[in-house]
Amino acid sequence: MQEDYARQKLRFRRRTVAAQPDSIILDSAQTEKPSGDKPLRIIGVIPARLASTRLPRKILRPIAGRPMLAWVWEAARACPQLNDLLVATDSEEIADLCKQNSWTCQLTSPALPSGTDRVHAVAQIVDADIYVNIQGDEPLLKPEHITALLHPFAKPHVEVSTLKVLCTPENIHNPNAVKVVTAADGRALYFSRSTIPYNRDGNPAQYWKHIGLYAYRKAALQRFPTLASSTLEHTERLEQLRFLENGVSLYVEPTPFDTIGVDTEEDLRLVEKILMQQSLNGSGKS
Image (tube, rainbow, N blue to C red):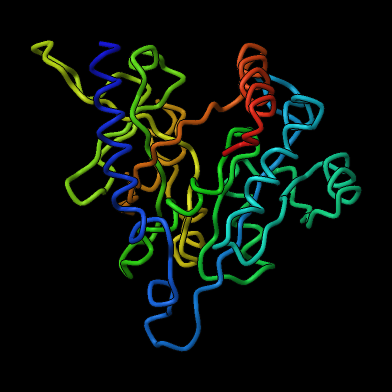
């Protein structure tokens, strides 16, 4: 299984590198509005809260000497496609950290139930054509993740995008690693904590792990709070299923760069080890 995964990942990375001139850079032709007036305005929003249930106050936990949020901010800020970047939070403590570091911050209501709702709240105040939802608990974020996330918007019918990466063997049956299956055109068919697709005959199969970054056109984001909360969303505890159950397509862009969302002390230690090793190697987060 390990050997099959290694071969799949090598082939995928080669395809990604070969496609880089077209798929990594959103040029002016790709970001023009249909009217041809001016390029699309794209802003990144990092929803940040302290009341996380599995790892309280994780957004402020130190990783290799810096708060987790600092790693996410620095990576997002390095993405050339973003016109602006801000933190959306209901916490005065997080707002103070932002002020100390000269990061743009927008206070939102503590009653908002999800990160998507916080991004929606920002959209009522800050105008843009595309909003990027950047998870604050993804300290291994790379600028390339955001660039890949924006690539589907070269097609005017795309409303929402997200990412996938080849699933490592140890994560295939891990319910904390959400899997995704897609149609031939990249549309998400389903997201699940279960192992999908089910490999009935045990032949070599390819599995994709979902990376929880999203980008929305403004109209799609404005619809989100009006969509009925779905049965599947509550069963799987995956808010992106609300879009699928209400007929909104999500386009899933592949990336060769995996991430580790920090939900436990073990995740925190692993991420710190990776970032410290990268620093020792002089590679930063690249």
